[in-house]
Image 1: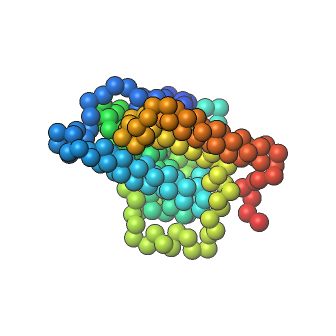
Image 2 (image 1 turned 90 degrees about the vertical axis):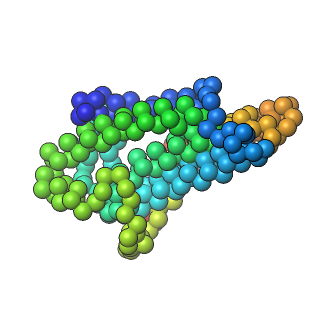
Length: 242
């Protein structure tokens, strides 16, 4: 599993986009009108949006409080220090938990039985392998310190007991959240909008209106993305707290 994890670690940045594309595979419905009635589509829309936004909220809070530098080095697992503050004091992999919820949520939103039943288990297997590879590195580097951390903090489940104290003595760095997440947010929001507009004609009945609306959304999100990218590249926005 560690070897498998090291392999997928190299390509994990592209994994999110690849799995997003699988949302548009033809699939049997997760929520069917025969079972849930004429308004069956409200179930995947409401539940899917709640789950996927919960995932991004977890990612956003985690990054804004205590970002973990585990981006790898030469496409290999690497960490500068053992981060245990913020949300990492309540879950060892909150960013991955956020990713899982984001993808599960859009899978539900797409009302795709194949995505939820086949793609998500595959995704969980890959993430488990990646985490085991990361933990192997961290254990070799930090030894007893990492073992002690593992003994009190769960790998996947977030312990909400005392989670309000995660904010004690810390400021939420919204600029870091934006600068670290704007690529992911663009792909995620475009996917959500595409699913809502084209998967559910009940929301926008006229086909021409659907195209016009989606193009308008793409232009707006593209403009916001371009502006943030400009601020980052020009140095006018940094994640340094004032």
